[in-house]
Length: 292
Image (tube, rainbow, N blue to C red; front, side):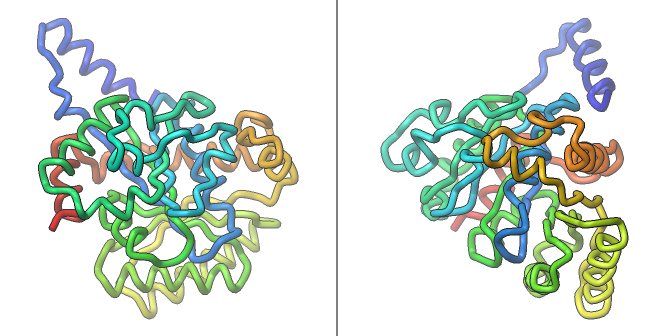
């Protein structure tokens, strides 16, 4: 188990009577992006989160696609409140976090994300601390809107790592490159993980990734890592229609196996622990990105 060492450490500390400070809890943030809509980014985000939860992680998914939130539809849940309600109307934070499938939690950023930078520093730090301490989350997955926006660029900066979702289609590869170009131009991140979705075979996946890698290496100051491919699978579309994520509705489907392998790749110990923050550090990180 990935969490075996951490569980042992906590057991030892408990035996010795040492209390774990919440600020010492670690959180890893992944910002999931795409160059264009229709590549399955949100579906990948949700199923990846569930696979990580099945591997023992406590995962929170933030739907950060302002005005076009649809992660809730894929999960079969309905948001009554979102971040905007918390900021403007004082709705308790625990009321805007919802139970998702497979043990994950979900929160809708909604229009509230537009007001992040209006917070004073104390409120910002309080917000991010309360949000993550409520569930003592190990992983925060931010499902951004497609393309390039101020909000998506901010969350790229805020995250520890970026996951780019694309398909083998030339337009998807071109638009993915544009997002990577923006990341490189503004020096937001030195690297990105890439998932090629809806591939017909290994060759098409290899060709798509290699094209993106070749152009990025030649023209951009950014490294990209191949996290794996998700095969085009009719059961994914059926799962979307049924509003039950494919890794739950069809756990033995080819696409489900692909997603689980990608989750294992991402959570591999050396990769997962390479860049990570305590909750206290995360609060400071939030202020640095969204603060005045």
